[in-house]
Image (cartoon, rainbow, N blue to C red; front, side):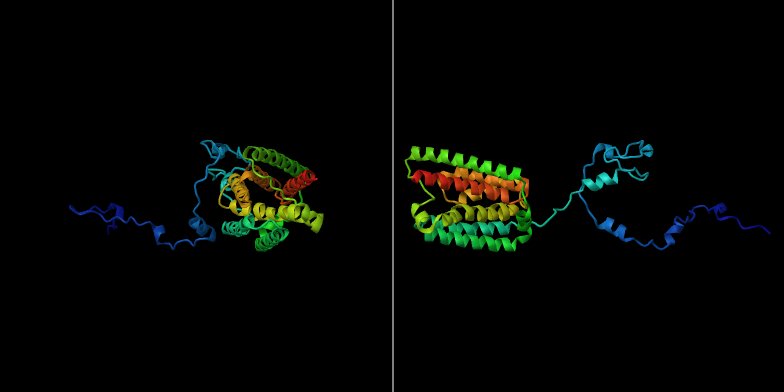
Length: 302
């Protein structure tokens, strides 16, 4: 009895094509269950990341033992160093940030109180009312933005930082004194005094120092270098945020002939805020500037 030929030995009839089974036997197997890691890899879309040239495997990567960039132990399956790739990925912002709407709202609220004060009679009652109102507004905003403000207040600056802030206050005062002298001489305008002898004699030096030196230094720095600068940093880089906040600080004072030293003062305070991560050097600069203005005006009146 003749044995049946193997399927591979069957010759097709003329005009017919043999049926070839191209199905892979492994296709009949159920798909392997996906792991959570695989799902995350499929769902995660990352932008292309530029890696250092030495962290990418070359043709001789089989003999590599360590990454030339970070020194990590090289794995045989790596095409690029996984450690370098992870460090090159963009990192999310750390720490709480203030939204841009908060500083803009605070600025326009403060502006609405400063502008009427420029046209009201320059009396103690007017100065005290505006100072009290601005203090309440800024305190409320600081409470609402406490996550950003508390680290600035709790950060203790070094003696070097405070000394530098005081010297910057002396610099801004010198520029203000010289520039205002030139402006008064060129334009023939009347000199403006922050200090009035009636204030000192009627209410005492403590009230004068509180309204001219302490309150502006503390409240304005919390507003501009705390809330406003912190919010602007979410929309632009640090340099632009410092300049914009300084310009806002300059405009708020509604003093056309003081724009130069006010702008410089705002830039210096913003620089201190970023470098020291504390509000106190900014307060020291502002307090030094206003104190020198008050002392010099008192000496002139005497």
